[in-house]
Length: 120
Image (cartoon, rainbow, N blue to C red):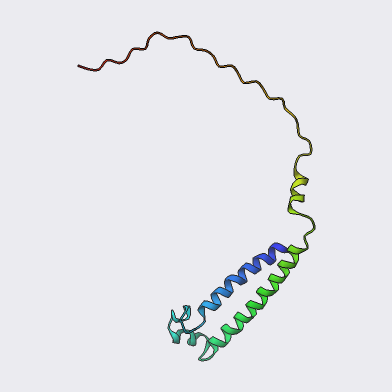
């Protein structure tokens, strides 16, 4: 249930962003992309502002409700997240004795290395 509400919450957040940007404002926003007559032809002469305002209001109400629900659910989680982690951790730890590193093998002294002769 918590995952479902979280998905709805994120969807509503994106919807609010879209609704706010598409509304006509003094700055133009995205509402001016299609021209002022384009929005009016879809919703009617006065319906665009009214519809978008109501849709934004209802989206904000649903967003607030999901925010309150998610805050309530996260606050009523009993215990710590670390408690869940310790339940899955192994209960016994095996002690191992450290092994001695191998002794380095001494190299026999090689014959004198000859430097490559330079071409004349």
